[in-house]
Length: 103
Length: 103
Image (cartoon, chains in turn blue, yellow):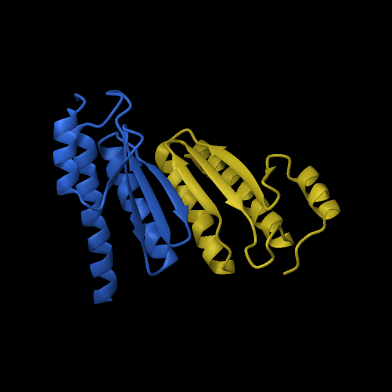
């Protein structure tokens, strides 16, 4: 997959306002959870998805705060896949919130 | 739980040779896995245990390399609980290795 142009990255960031750019090659988002094990469940879901598409983010777990960073090693920068996954992680985050509210 | 003395920390570190001290207040170990989802399973196990004892380590997931850092916030340093958990995480790591070899 090809690295996105600066223009395309800027455009993608306006569509993913919860993500911020870091060090040119990375995008990052922090997800906060009400319960620790809810955050761990989120990590499981993004890990499963990452394995399916063979594209693994960096994940840090600091109690109820989960930080996720995406980049494409092969392309040495950001690709469409990074932003596709960013959106999917956001959807998973909202789904976990809904699961909890319904239980 | 009380903060350990320097002497007790030095002693505990000689008994936990895979752990190294960081910035006075922390101990850290890096665990490497053959498969990505094996590392994620390890994260699940240490997270469950951490929740049981209400003592949560910092965890970073960088593909098949998992970094775990322990400290006791309340004691503003290292306590016996940090070293007890360090040993338990090591046992879980070896158990996952055995699971894989037997499967």
